Length: 299
Image (tube, rainbow, N blue to C red; front, side, top):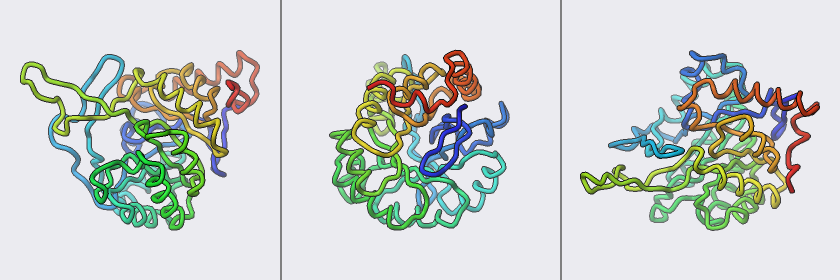
């Protein structure tokens, strides 16, 4: 009933844990069997390990959170050596989320994942491009096209590209990524936001700006997913403020083949199994034999 197939990979259901909100899965396995999930997108990985940003990293806002973690991660080699063996025991699809500061970083990190047991790669193009003054790879379509096309040449894994809502033109961005060789698209990543400490008259975050996620961004995410689904011919995975099964259904009706849940994991560690159960109940109530029947029913 809930099975979906994305780029030749079978998922037991369309619910995927979003990168950066689920670690590598072990922590949540203390709450429930994460093997119930369709998949887990790993903590964002870079070629070399990173300590992340200094100062406050998480800040709660009305209807969401802001984060400035800075891609703290063990690096690709340690992920391969230490984390993949543990993730394999979780009995769900492993999606490696990969970022980089240069195109060469992306290429090398992704190529090292080729001979591993991960099922897919999710390319995070929201990372700052250090060779272009710090502007994210995912802002301008031609830059995104370049990084995706070069990564496509070095990997035999299904390639999902995660889009930033801060892109100049999200639809053009998606089309260019498809032309560059993306097998699927995921969106949206966090929106750039800001918070101020009025008592000390300074920004909350050391980097001034941070990523906003949670229910506040859902209407924007839903609109962008709907728009992108109309211009590409590859699967789209929707995310952004999904808190309930009803939210997930909205994204699938807008065209998403699967969904990712992120911020809700911090608010409710049991969110994933609850959403999966809610999807099952919806299908039974509505007489839906296959969840794919509702995908893209909103034109």
